[in-house]
Length: 400
Image (tube, rainbow, N blue to C red; front, top):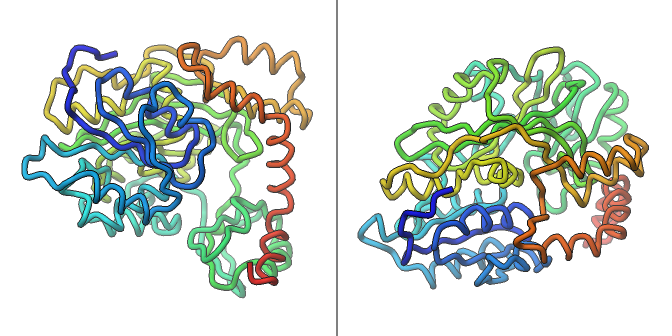
């Protein structure tokens, strides 16, 4: 890791929820002497805010309050190299950058498309799918869906996912077995919302490719991460990180996609792997929650972005150094409760892992906080996921 460059006097903002995404950014940037402020959307959770690398934080609660804080505390700069760095740690922060580009771009080095409206548009997975097809990426069959639509062209089983939501999100992903199931389930949907109906890929694993598109358009890919087990929050909880980019991931197509949308910054591309083929799902145009696992495996893309923006020598590693096991050491235990793996297997995999979501022997408090609450939070997450559509419907009836 790079420790020779002098970053004193440079300011940075890590923007997002108090979770392992922003925690990973703090740890990745800790090797540089940056003046970092964590701006938290939502409430304090004792994860990133508990890190020893979090010297300053501000609980903004909302995107709007976050932007107000940044305008007040980060003045516009005439010299580009004096601007601060803004690291988005979630979709809300990424969209916040695009929607407030005019007031932020003279204050910060931003991760955004050259035309901010394009980033806003491609957050709709239906639009992103069209760009991916144009780039030559293999994608599942898909179509937009709204309540009342009857012309269905996607083969079943299929996944239903929200893409434009007004009010609470009823669910993250719903597996639909047939047209009849779709029409039956649609009765609980918000009539104002838009969804994507996407062919179900009976995957052997998910695959995530970590990368950064530098200001000059150079694409850096750290490696790929197979996700082989999943937790109750919908995220991958166990897998392997590798330094290579197999051809079935179509790195040329991925590069073409970024040429089309002209995005610069950190990203992660998601695929489902089935029968030797990788089906492209989406690309997250911001720091990904798993990117700090690649940092533990030897790559430091957040620091690489800083160096590239300042036209410094690119001494931060852009590649994973070795193949390692990655695990969510808190949430992966749900797979024991579900009967997917044995307790012995869970303990063995955890002992073998070298990349973690929360654990760091030099920064233990976030892990301690998460470990204390895991035994009540995991069952609560599972119950909430199962009954969430009905809970949202009841709250809507009561106007809440």
